[in-house]
Amino acid sequence: MEKLVESLSSNQKRNQALLHPFEGNEALLELTKGRLGNEEPCHVKGAQGEEYVILPKHLLLGLVNLLQKGREERVKLNLERDILQQMPIDFEDVWEVALQEIHRENANPSYVDTKRLIKEIKRRHPNLFFQLGDLFGRAKEEMLD
Picture 1: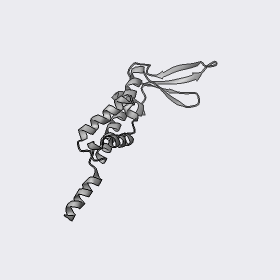
Picture 2: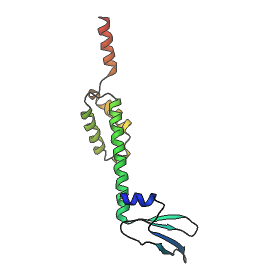
Picture 3: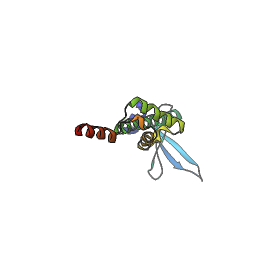
Picture 4: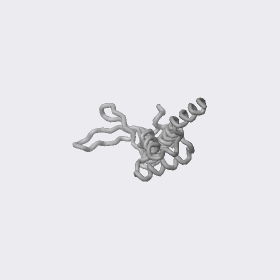
C-alpha cells in the first residue's frame, strides 16, 4: 500500500499511457512508459488532457479497506468522546451497550450517529450515567443541613 501512495503522489510516474479515442465506445490505450503490472498504478492521459489511474483490483480493494478501517476508527473515537461527555458511571458498561446496539441494528459502524446513540442509551438506561441534577440536589441539601 505504501508503494501505491508513493506512486500516486510522486511526480515521477513509472507507468504511463495515452488514451486515444477510437470508433464509438472504443479507445486505444498506448503504453508510453513502463507496463501494466500487478503492483503499481498506471497513469493515463486522455485526449483532452484529463488524467486517469488504472489500479490492479487487489490494490483498489486494499485502499477501500484501509479507508473503511480509518472511518471505523474515527467512529470509535467519536463514540468514546460522546460516552465520556454524558458522564458514565462505568465507561466499559456503556461501551458494551453501545456496541450491542450497533450490532442489533445491523448498522454500518462507520456511519453511526454516536451522539444520538449515546443520548438514546442514556434515556433508556439512566442507571449507567451520573445524574447531575441528583448530585447537585444532594450537595445543596448537605449544605443546608
